[in-house]
Length: 225
Image 1 (cartoon, helix red, strand yellow):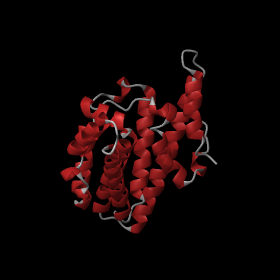
Image 2 (cartoon, rainbow, N blue to C red):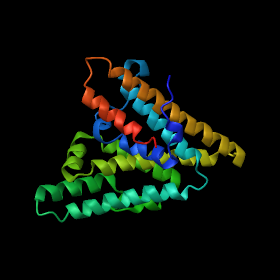
Image 3 (cartoon, helix red, strand yellow):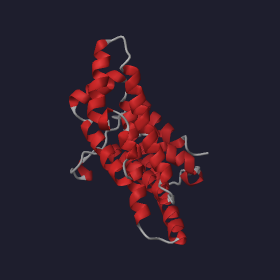
Image 4 (spheres, rainbow, N blue to C red):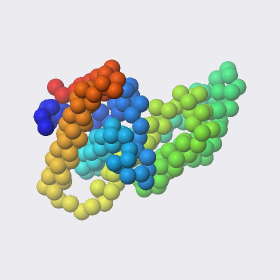
């Protein structure tokens, strides 16, 4: 298989790709269905999940201090609360009611007390938020309030905090961490490379939409200098 040059990408560019998987054409690629074998799921869903997993493992491998990941998590929770506060001042009573329902469901004490929890408890709280947000009624309120992007950030920062916490709990030397980081970065290169190969092959198949494939390919190639 050809090497498409992902090894030359910056760390920041590779890490930012995680967020781009929730935007544009990649947003339309479904997430994996839990408890379903990978070989029965859409091929692009499998590759999207692989890229995302390897990026997050790479991010976690670089961690020596959990504080930065905790700050990201706390900041996302504050954004959620502040955005709800703005919606609670809407002239539209339906918007105000939706904001109150979401606040009651997703925020501890209706505010941001969850940011004072321990790292492990924050992870559990964030995972519970993501699960609650899947309720159709709450999902409709989130969409009405324009909060789907912030909930995606809750999911991302919670997952990264979980992975960083697990890594920090292991007793490893600096040289072991360095080797782990290099291997984790290589895994990101491989995942991106394999996905781009698949996309380029799909372009040769007439049953696939070329414009959509071009958009997916552009997102990946955009991280290559």
